[in-house]
Amino acid sequence: MTHISKSIEIRTPPEKIWEMLALDRLSEWKEGYKEDLTSIEYTSENGTLKDKYRVGFSAQLETKGEGQMNLEITESLENEKIVYHLVGGKFTKDLRLTFLLTPLEEGTKFTYGVDYEISWGILGMFLDKLFARREVKKGVEKALDNLKSILEE
Image (cartoon, rainbow, N blue to C red; front, side):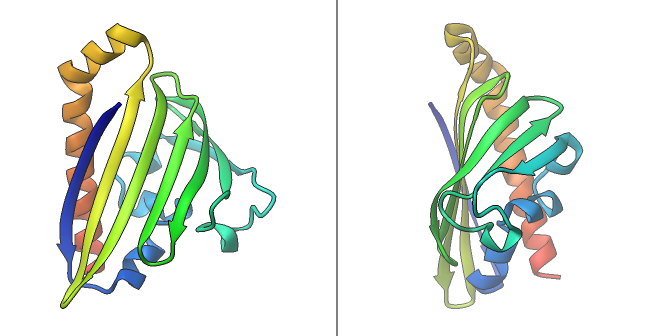
């Protein structure tokens, strides 16, 4: 599994960043998310948007690139940490997005972690080293810059 993690300091309290980490808010700052997402269906029993930060919250996503993926929140500590686990994509068979918030004297250290495994065995590992890893890093950096600029306006 490939791990990519990057942190940034944002001059805003963790609560403001936390609001942006809900599934329905990711498109506001996560590069390519809005353009790639074709549908989303909330599938958990507690599938209302008020439950969107709770462990067990689940959804089925359809994207242009990956096709259908199942998503579930596997960890959630309000204003501290949330982990989205996605499975079932055409190219990415296992994906975890981890968002960590650490309060600072003047704002928050926000860490965006991505752990993923590309399908196709050895070929997938080769493609990851050849180009996917670099593209994922660029996406994480761009998302962090977007989030910072939105929240520090």
